[in-house]
Length: 469
Image (tube, rainbow, N blue to C red; front, side):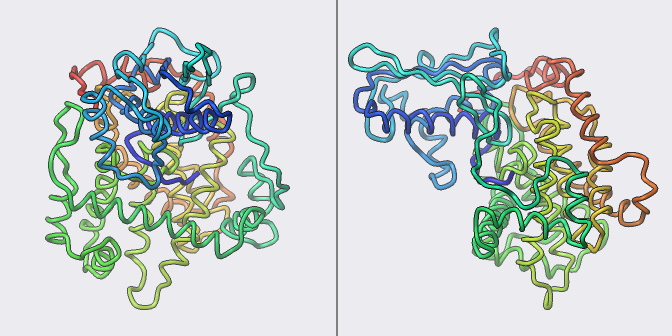
């Protein structure tokens, strides 16, 4: 559920990027890579309708070159387009140069939507003997991609038997009945794949990537790419709260944040600042942690760092707290993915900001001493107040209203956690499973124009000429 990638969208940028990487790996493993003479990418449905604003084309090009979104130079993302235009070539797999004209070889066909999922794409490579190698892929949201043409929505065979299989909140409650916390049960499942030291190292790597992203966000001024002219606000907000950014790296900077003497109103502004910082970076093709999506990537770090900043600066084990927080958040996100969707193209923004807010609320509730029931209640409250939220990005850009929604989602998560902690969960009238089912039925009833198509809502009220990066 938590993965490192490049913005601005997990479904429209990271997913197509990973699909293109998969295509190149297939060409290489079959011995066809050095025989490729041309490539063509066809984007359908939501990928086509908002793909230009989401940077889908450049993401596919990065993937075709074999660049890894976790490790590539993020500045290269915005350099590749002009460089390819000048050379008229693209190095497939980093080695095989083929003629490439972006407007010709990447096709945005919004009139067609593949039957299985609105985020469908087809990649084709013509070989030296005229044969064509084809791959059909579906970007399912959150950076998850399927390549199975016959059953594209089927889950991969994980080849392990989990000690605590979880498909619903009710399952999670049952596994915790012996007194274990949510984090304990999630760790038990993770141990089916990796050791405790590997689990901890992986989660801290995610935490550090979130912190690095926030640090870049509060340190970088200017206007976001894409043609909408949105100015970055996180640096000025940080300056009004804490003064100039201090520290040579994100760890030193955040230690200063933790030791700052903030009043209640300042804390509220800090949470908003952190959420904005992350998603302004996301909108600028920065490196973020998908949680559960790129468009909602600012919610979880804002709430996590709010929690860490509130701990005793001298005695708290912030690594242990970070690990616990992320274990809980990831499981809640997985339950939403299994029971509904985390794709805005399938469910609107309730599937992104709503799910991220629920993830953060549950994690915060458990980390602040709540029971399993309190944590699940917090997740339910957070999602309950995002039900029906549409996805209507202006110009298809993950900027307005997306960036501010991260700040709103973070604050709702904190409120939901505190409401749950002050309540008796046994008196709740709505369960987390109830709200997940409701979210999914709402998604199915929602008009398609409100599902990341830029054909409804704010997207048609504010005309803008998108500049594809």
